Length: 303
Length: 251
Image (cartoon, rainbow over all chains, first blue to last red; front, top):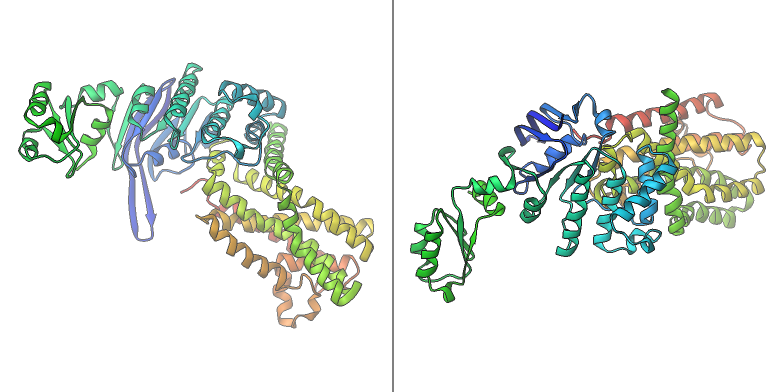
């Protein structure tokens, strides 16, 4: 069974006389027990897409199914089986982590005794030290607050979890710790659909990546395949302006940047190396790297 | 199945009320006190200037105000939960419905106002003398009014995109619902053309009922049953509007 499926999904927002087409006929199938990341530029339609699947927003037309249920006609059945972490969500500040997780579980209909047990086990699982369990959330660091939210999601026993930019605002260590937790979700058989602007995060976590641009899906594959199928393989990043540059930009297969830093993309490593040899390395301050998921997004969505 | 659904709904509503009412009040008792300031300030002023006779009206006005302030005050919570912590967004995607959410908020408002309500009832007992029947009517009217004003607050707040807009709105609504209409004074001081609108306004309607039931007002503009029916019908209408017009699942 699929975790989610959309067929020609459209979302059009009407703001006065203005019509904004946020999704334009999106059709995708997302398998169960996978981590799928949605990538795209700001305003591409990622959040709209997961808010429709999360039953928080009605589509304008088209079909969307979550765990086999129609998100419009069978929203109640969908809501019993999913958990959502909205963009920029925060736990409530006055309750303690234990109170917050426990009572939000009760608000989802869980009996109090089960909620208490689930909360403790989830807080433990998310690595929140016991000494913090009964303090107000406001006394915790940003990283621990995020973990409290993840503990809540974890405790919900959902089959499918939506995470909208879960690691925004976290430092690199906290982010990596969050990745471990997200991966532990999948180990328990939970399907995860997330949005992120961190390409490294998407590459490391995702089984599949869906790239959305201006409301349309422009790429859907494993992160590795997406990168491997790019026509260019290497990039030369030029950090400073230098004399030879303008001529060399003409030889690149794809160029990004109208002021430093410039990124010159090449199909062959030889071309990239030739460029690096012909430029005055010290003046130009260059780096050669293989292309990655971020380059996929830049190449496919810029211009 | 129906019993399971009802039991689950009660659990959901009480879970939210506990989180939003009891725990919040326990951690920040200043909130509880802040809801008492207006009614008790007026009670003190009325008592100083008019003695016990005016203070009796202030006690009734205070009871009505506390219910309405807690109902309207939910606007702040709704806007904060929707726009800042995104709790509403999380709960939309859960078995909680808009009705559960709103009743949970209203119940948390009731729990929040319990200390003030008890204090005001003590004053009422001392200044007016309450029978069991009048006490019962006060509590019923208080709950209906809280639901009615919570319906108004919830509907308005779900359209507010920024918490700061709530502050002026709640102040204006409070003035329009508690100070301007005959809540702290008898409706007989109004020109006759304004009595009809005062009956329709839930706060002044509730105040008329309470003034009458406690013996402060010898007669009502309409009979008691009609006033209670209007208040009850308004509550149903406001709750219905809040469910139908509020932005729970966004379109």
